[in-house]
Image 1 (cartoon, rainbow, N blue to C red):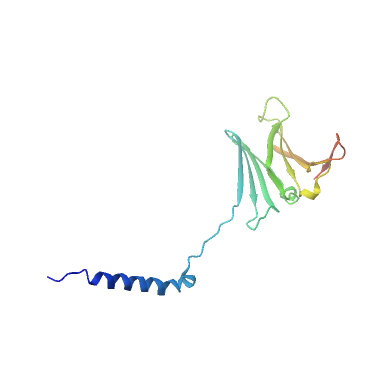
Image 2 (image 1 turned 90 degrees about the vertical axis):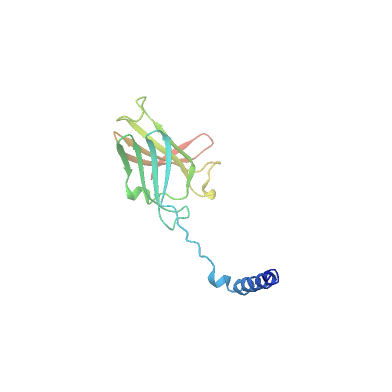
Length: 157
């Protein structure tokens, strides 16, 4: 019976040589990562209450396609012409609030967030955007800018 031990170094060196030869070809055979960009960002406030921001696929903080606010079975959409005016949203500042104690049920509510680049700060604050809804429908959008140390002024968006 022949021993296989003398063949082991040969097989190992052959495998090692193949690895090094193929290693030169790795850039040509390299795996290409497929990158998928997010199309929507969802914020959950309480069970059944959420805001969904649809964004452009080539988005870099610049463009919002749609905003839908959902509560229970009702959906409230922000018109596309208002969404087109939104840019550089500060998603960490998004809040959902109510104007009546009945909260969401057939009453007035708003979605508020900061928007703008750092060079748009006035008196240390970025502009705020209020998206106002009433009775399950979009009402209006306001841009609130700080105009003094204790003053804010609302402008239609």
